[in-house]
Length: 263
Image 1 (cartoon, rainbow, N blue to C red):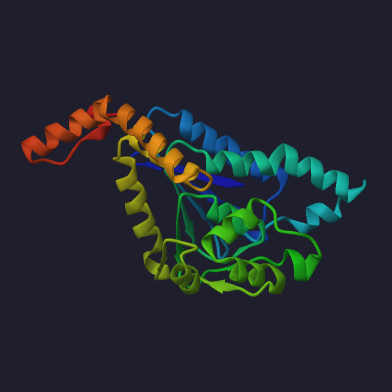
Image 2 (tube, rainbow, N blue to C red; image 1 turned 120 degrees about the vertical axis):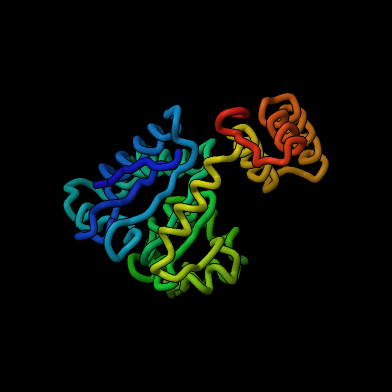
């Protein structure tokens, strides 16, 4: 269902159902959520890398699972979203440690949400992003896709992507700013792992506060954002990480936030 490995303070979580193109069900979504919670609770994990095994990153919701339901589908999907998929998306968005996605192949439907709910998105050049909810199934985007895509693209681009279901290539997604980088397929995991390892070296407190600041910037006024920055910066200057940064600058060495500056 999922595959987990640890290296250099990075936990790699791979969706591991290649036969179904890593399509998701409540069972696999809960397994992913539990794995993310375990990573955050770990004393040694400081960054998480999410990817997929096989040719796809994630083909979205498992339609066979929907077709197997006996009762009304609207009641079923309402419960599944409320109890499983929304908690997963919310947890991913609010994780205190860096979450990177290495999109190794197509991300379709809810798979787009899984990819873009991560803090930094890298994608193989062969990968693409597609939202077939409206044209193929007559339903609407979920898993946070409407929020995420409309911020990664402009409104017209996001709406066109939703209404046509046309695939957006990794290169085009990177050019538009929806993802961080498009990378040669053979280099994807090497670069993603290196990025995750570098992020794992950062001060957890500085990462957590920076994520809080950028999320708040979507809704704050400029003055509200200045006040939040003041609060978060005051906390930062009072922590061990800043002292380690100063010592490293004075001693002309790289700061070691893992050993000397957690907060």
